[in-house]
Image (cartoon, rainbow, N blue to C red):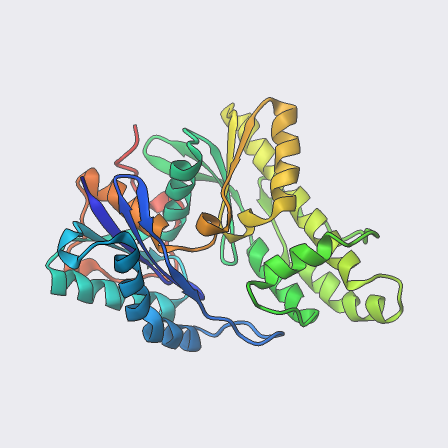
Length: 335
């Protein structure tokens, strides 16, 4: 049996998870939360990760009832992500690997999400919609690569939602996207927004600029409420995502769709995707906030699969990169 520990810190969450042959033994995380109306800066986020890393590591080992000598392989996020937080987390992983004398595996963050989604839901070969604060991609597996069929050409969908939450001065606790979702449930009046699907790709920056510029005036005039605007934004961006996902499913002849990434927790997105899947006679797979949101277990799972297929990373090559495409990784653990 292989026991893998995963270190994830590509954005504002520091997560450390332990997996034993596909079973999650522990998965604690700590989130860096900033005041309403503010985002998180790389330097401050890295300081947060440095401050809580040992505490989260002790918690992961304690919850799993394991000692360092029980661990077989150390896995960490190589990228993509924010530079300073990635480096802080990789430093912890490298140090632990040397102290415990264990092999280390560098993991692609996006592939961590996909493999965790496949493990938790049991999806075999799904078309994947990966939606988070930093990434928006439609992915399908073919010939040892996770191929990107469509993606955002500017900002990620999660970034679009987060930045609108800042305009409304919504709380960042537990996350701005979650708070937009709760307001959207009370929205009644739909505001037509720019709908930017370009072939298989999507664009959110123009739509965001449009609603940012109009929001204050519309709310102050009483024409629309904040709830209406959250509802309108969600409906528009999720319709765009469902459209490109359906097109990829049609192209691949796929009967499974899997939503991963932090925005994948959104129940309205899941509901809209399920309507599309049902119409196609397909099956929707989705996970809850334990595994949708960045966590250490997903890095442990992807690293475990890589390690089992014979991959390890030499210590000299355990660097980080802010840009690391999903289709750059050779998938040696799948046929």
